[in-house]
Image 1 (tube, rainbow, N blue to C red):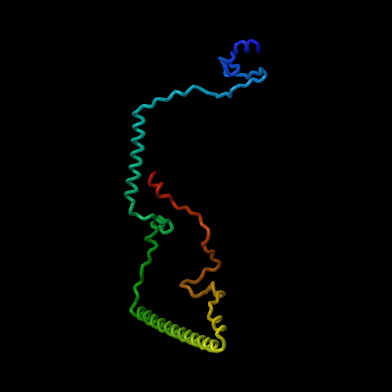
Image 2 (image 1 turned 90 degrees about the vertical axis):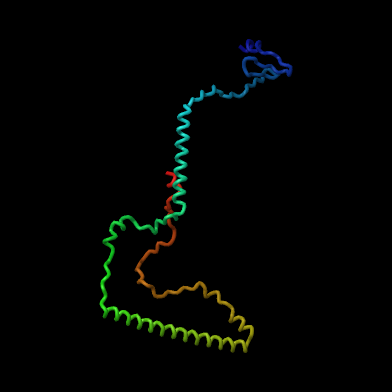
Length: 205
């Protein structure tokens, strides 16, 4: 077989033996056969012919969908994005009439009593405010007097005393609240899962 194959070979000017029917070539040395890589080619697939009316209908549907989305965006252009946390749930709307409390009619004596209580409370708070101001004034005067005496003794110690104390910050204070604290209440502050809706995508649907 090798002799029959070599008989069909021709010698080209470059000194290489090539095969006309196949892509096999050899060098001058007959022991070195080399084959070109297989390309695995295949015939081109026949294009499917699509009816122009179907293509036109698809383009029309796509165009109408985009126009509808644009109209929705223009319609809601001036509306603010709703905040789900501030929206009233539908079940609350359903029971709204049951939740409304009727205001009782106050008698004249009750109104007079409440007015007197408010006046007494105002006088009491005003007195506390004046006491706090007097206490603060005395503390400031005593502090200034002590600084003046220290400055007479040593200017260096005075400059050190008037420097800001960084250990005072951070400052925390706990005072009275409008409502009593709930015992063992777990504050919701911290990490949260964002479940906000994508309003732009909802317009396109």
